[in-house]
Image (cartoon, rainbow, N blue to C red; front, side, top):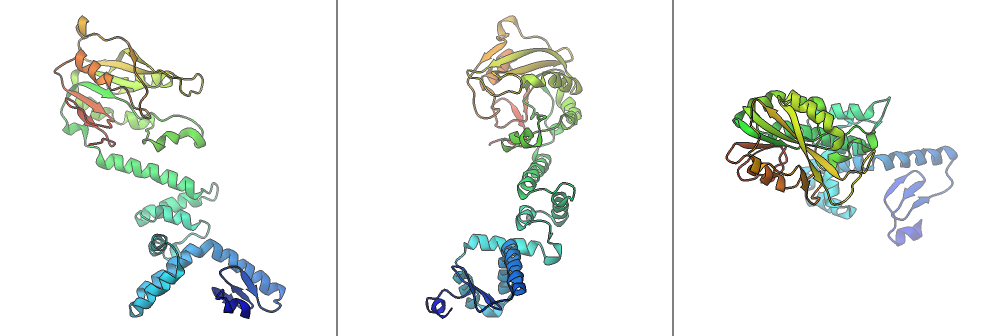
Length: 331
């Protein structure tokens, strides 16, 4: 041990006959089995709690205003990333000892540290479920979805403030029905909605739709029936559809898809377009970004019915001559 001390390798932590150094464990003398076992259990616990320990240690040092530069020096000597250490302190301050869940990891607590206390408790209860405990990764995924839903509710401008429109164009964020591992992978790109959530928009859609109006609604082939039902709930009756044929084959559950449907529905007595303005029912256009639809469709609709009020629901960008509604609009 003296040789290690000369080389400056001592120190980290000493308990009885055991000393943790920068390069390993030094055992001084001949410990009894119980001493050896107890120290091993202690190492395991510290290994699980080291981030908590760093955070609590730093938080205590911060509270000692009389230490001044000595505190800063001690932190510098650790040699750890300052951003990481600050995060440890933040999480520890958010969760006092009595609120930390022994059945969950530090990473679970870190995922919800930015939330209000009631929401922290809710999500830790969800993760700690004795019948179905969740990993920190699963917790992060669900919290992200929850935050997106809250953001949607807080940021989307109320439809009823927008007036009434003759043309409604939309690409509903359909949610697929797959197993947990695959079902919500699409959420990495944008938040999806269940059918009952889409149905719940009926009152607002009926408020903005003119008595005589037309809706253009995108849907994957597998959602054709759901799209027709959603149209009916929103106050429109299905009339026909257009098909976007893509230049390359994509994925699919039954067949590999190379097309999408643009369904048309009518409310009231909205007229068909003049013969010269009726477009081809087949749209040939390249693939764009994930779920992004051909921009040529805007032009098709504008030429079919010029000079009328138009709105795009679930829009991602603004377009001149249109009102855009959605929580993902890029200015």
